[in-house]
Image (cartoon, rainbow, N blue to C red):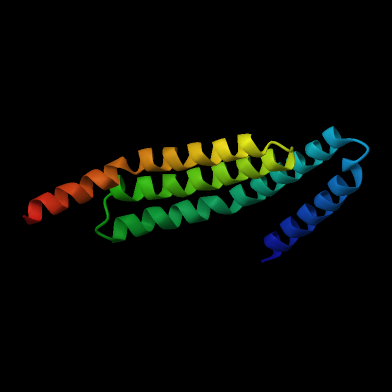
Length: 128
């Protein structure tokens, strides 16, 4: 909880600073936003190790094979990265680039999920 409060405070301070500077120096405003995003990502990565360990432990204890769990985790990661990239592009005034990044993220997630779709098709084929 403390980490989240720190991240929110840093993000809010950077957002206000970027907003105040945007009219006089839009480039610096973007740099402030990028720096704040990088800081929040670093804070996020501090907690990500525990999440990955939990997912690995869940995979070991359950009957889920890594071939099924890995694409799910990758799809989540792709979604997060595409969303962050899209929002950064929107902040820079590049809405079409943002939409393209989000479309690419969706296609990459679907591509990553192909093994899952294949497993479902094999399961359905084995039922008939």
